[in-house]
Every structure is written in structure tokens, then in C-alpha cells.
Amino acid sequence: MISNRISPTTLQELPLKKKTLILADLHLEENAAGTEKFLNLLQQNIPPDSLVLILGDLFPFWTSREFDPEIGLTPWERNTFRFQQKILKAIALYKKKGGSIILVQGNRDFLFRSKTQQEQKIKTFGWEKCFDQVVPNFCRLKTEENSVFLFHHGDIANPKDRGYFLLRWFVRHPLLRKVLFAIPQKYANLWVYKLKNLFYEKVTPVPKFFPQLAWEKWAQKQMKQWQADYFLIGHFHPQKMVQKKLSYGKLAIVLPAWFVHFHYYEVQSSGAHSLKIWKE
Ligand SMILES: [Mn+2]
Image: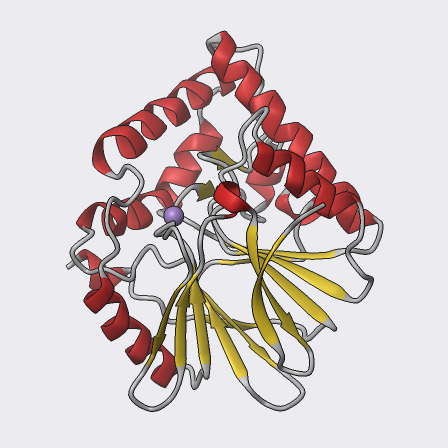
């Protein structure tokens, strides 16, 4: 029932750059190595004419509304908000200097802000300052040699993960967004943290196992629908990259999480592609 209502039907085409760096599941936290490496990646050594593609779950939990850390929050929560603002500002600076960065929405990225006039009166750290695009579902990249790379966060790969389907439907619901923008800041702050605790600690903790068969079936279907040669997702945090050659000679890939060993995938405009580790 739920899966029908939220079945993904949209596809966004990505601009082809000389290099596309795909980072999945960053889960950026304060004083974590993954955070330092990510800031380092933004601050140096990315060649011009490249694209950073965030494949979902930028933080353990965040929304694009600029909450007031001084209101109604515990010290730990205040620090979390301040930390996130610091990272978002670094991303905004990277973009301001001419970098390209696109976010594929994961199950931990809440983007409540829409562009209606009413909501624009609410103070937000608009995602427009940080990302060239935010992709809600699938996106696709065509290389010079016409090979097609398809991307998705991957949280709907396993139909048995009812919690994730419910979560996805709920947090993307326009009504929830309206409510969270309409109520006073103090209550919005608290509600967001209540939602976080409800969903991420009780209903859907980090996936415990990798549903190989469900993923293969889903990947095959999506690759056929979107005419892809390669299909990359994150979400499942495998220890090593998972690869599956599908029956018609196409390749489905599950990327390891960035925050573990700083893995990312690189696709060049020529079509050359490989898994790499950020060593700076
Ligand atoms: Mn995820």
C-alpha cells in the first residue's frame, strides 16, 4: 500500500563533468575522521570541472531548516545543530568558489523547505546555497561513450524494509513539512528531535544485513526501466564494495560508507570508473 504511493517515478539527468566523485553515507559527526576528510576534499585538490555527488545520508540526521540552537534543546542537541551549520557553510563556500555539488536525498536528509512564499518567510539555511540540485529519487549520468550510470540512495531496495518505506513516505509528506514550518521554533526543534528518536533509534536503525537477492531483483528492474549500464547505491554500508554482474552483462554496485574508510567512486567523462580511497 505504502510502496505504491511512494514508488519512484522521477529521474534527473546529471551534467557530465570531467570527473564525478560519488560519496555515499557520509554520516558526518563532530570530531570524526570522515568529517575532516570531507572538509579536506572540499577545500583542496578537487580539479575544476568536477562534480561531487553525495549519495545520501550526509549527517546522521538533519533538516534544511535553520533551527535556533538556543531554544528548547539540550546542550548535545545545540552542539549538533551548530556543527551541521559549520559543515553546510563549508559546502556553500565550496559551491560559491565554483565547485559543483549535488545531493541525492537519503533517508536521513530532511529537506522540508519548499519555495512557497509562506515558507520563505521562515529562516532557513536554504539548500540552494549548498547544492546545485537536490535529487529526490534517481539520477543518471551519460558519459562521452554513451555508457549510462544510474544512482539512488538505496533505501527502497529491499521491499521487506517496511520501516524505511514508511519513514520515506512520512518525512517527505507535504503536510509534515507544513506543520514543521508553521509551529513556533521551540516546538519545531523538539518535534524534530522526537521524530529522530522515534525513527532512527526504534523503527529503522542502520540496516543490519545486506539483502542480496532483493537488491539484485530491484537493481535489475530499475536498470531496465532507466536504461542503465551501471547502477550505484549506498545505504547498506557494506564492508567492501558489493558488485553484481546482471544477466544481461550490466553491473550493479553497492558502495561502502564514506565514514568507514573514506571510499568514493570516480567516474570520468570518458567512461573510465573505479572505487577509490580519499588519502589526503
Ligand atoms: Mn540510508
